[in-house]
Image (cartoon, rainbow, N blue to C red):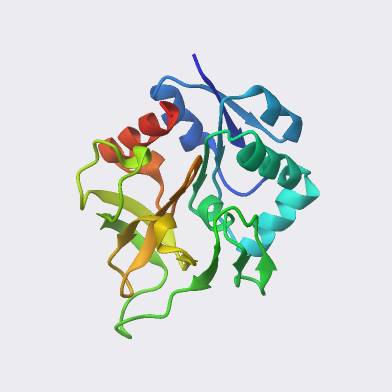
Length: 205
């Protein structure tokens, strides 16, 4: 059974992520200890809350250096979920401009309602428009629905890093993928059959 690390940096309830991964057959470790990153074959960074708080928690708890080494040098498959995806960016504006992990080039910006009556935050089910093939989305039909809760979105610098978008406030990036690094703006653990398929895809990388 593969061992998967769910990073606990005190930014959200990890219970549903853990249970979903276990249902998909993974041996899950939820840990606050960055040294545990060295003994797993997959890494997941979940999270809810602000960009600035997320980075501050990762830095304070000693995660940042270990994440960068594992993702860029050791090429461990890495998945960011919701805030975890946003933290992959170079910078975020929530709570004031803050440097991110810089794993996928881009910025994180607040939604501008378009049209003006559009509700922000974006909460509920919405579809993925798949723009490029990636193992993370294998077997998931185009325009499948996933569950979102967010007010900020990832603006990718390179379109080659965008695997899917979602039609809301125009279109926003909902899946990023670069080599072994992936991010989903939605919550796969709350997204029923399609979400579980995505998690299984990640575990099979």
